[in-house]
Length: 337
Picture 1: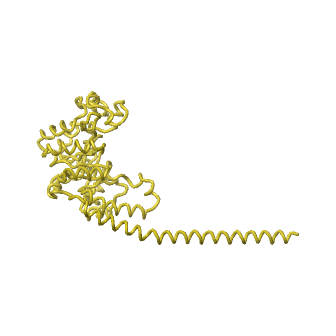
Picture 2: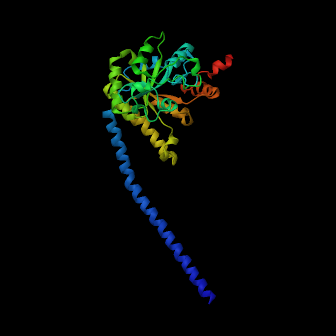
């Protein structure tokens, strides 16, 4: 009897093997069918998008010389390389006039400040972290200008005792402050809010303040916000803040998807919205990526670079400007010490 059981077991294994092979071939044929059906449509879609982008794209910059003058030239080495994030927020109260003044006193002209909008429609120089440190919850848009100006942004900073009390500045107050400086900085205005109200208020302010517009580069994470702003005011120089690929789960799964996404961003989105600079994560930047962006006429800037060795690397090897939280760790200063 035992040989019958063995025979039945062999027959079951054989049938299971045949079913498995059939299932594999079926899945392969289905995949092959959909690939052959999808690839032509994907190709046609990409071609259509490329053609359409030629009709909606905005002029990248009204004056390339103006952009070059804003970002300095390498003749200003070593002060050319760093851009002080929030006015070098590790060295002085972030997003404060005191921080900007300290940067200028050291000879650094490139400063990035955060901008948001209040519940009453006023553009202010602050971010959500400022509110959280002061014990307030929610975004800037949940609070009025009166509430924000009751805060002292210097008291919340570790080195705040070295500075006079200062409240949150409005965009108008910042523009007046910069006008008073002997050497006005190049301002990178990083939009924390990309709502329609923010775009409308900003374009109105920049239309009425030509001097401020000439020295400002508007930065946003939203390509749509940049497109809307430059469609209203083509003379505004804009830049895109590109989040790390690793923050997007779909891009973690495949280098092919990452490459396609990067190519679309550089060759379709960037020309359409007309950006002049792009902020990229240092972990995902290399010489090849830098060249790809420069080839489409966009200047790459990396973030966040804080250690002296990293700064020396981006100065000497990458030859790329970087965003930093502290100007005290600049390589040339440490060499002098």
